[in-house]
Each structure stands twice: as C-alpha cells, then as structure tokens.
Amino acid sequence: MHAFDVLGDPVRRRILDLLADGERPAGAVVDVVATEFGITQPAVSRQLRILREQGFASVRVDGARRIYALERAGVDEAAAELDRYRRFWRQRLDALHTEVARGTRARRKDA
Image 1 (spheres, rainbow, N blue to C red):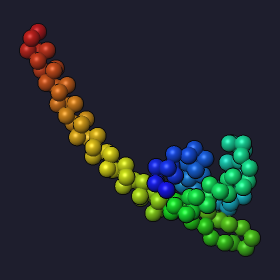
Image 2 (image 1 turned 90 degrees about the horizontal axis):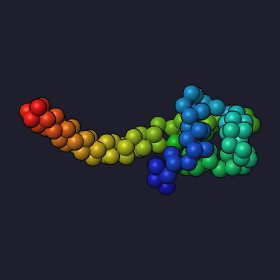
Image 3 (image 1 turned 30 degrees about the vertical axis):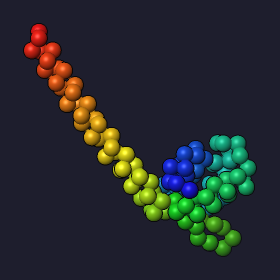
C-alpha cells in the first residue's frame, strides 16, 4: 500500500492525529474513533492493523492492553513522497511568479 493510500482514509488520519499526541491504548483509540465515525471496534482495529503493517504505527503489549504509538518510518516515507511533488510544483510556481512579474512590469511600462 502506498503512503498516500494510507493517509487517504479519514479514519486512519484521525488515528494518526490521536497518536501524534502520544501513545494511546487501543481501547482509547477505539472509543474516540468509533464515536466520531460511527464504526465498530473491529473496523477501528482493522485500521490500526493497516497503520501498523504500513509502518505508521507501532504496538506494544502492556498486560492485557495494546498500546499504540506513531511510528516515524511511515511518516518519513510520506514526507519523502510529498517532497518529490513539492520540487515539481516549486519549479512551476517559480516560473509562474516570473511570468506575473514580467506582466506587472509590462503594464507599468505601458501606463
């Protein structure tokens, strides 16, 4: 699964938002996400599994609880993908800026 596929899902993004604030027990994640999105505990657990498998979250066992944390590897991968697009758009936006500046100078000259 591509990083953008992972981040394209609003439930997974919400889980990542929760984990960005620090570790959370699976039950706490389920409570928030199930309430906000109207989905079941198994559906939330599936999204947690996807995040874990794709490197966006990690889990550790604490007795009977599963504690989830944001995993840097997935976030770094997504950031690297975005950087590729930023470079692409930065060049085009710089070119657009140049053309706008030329047009502004030309209008001033004609005025």
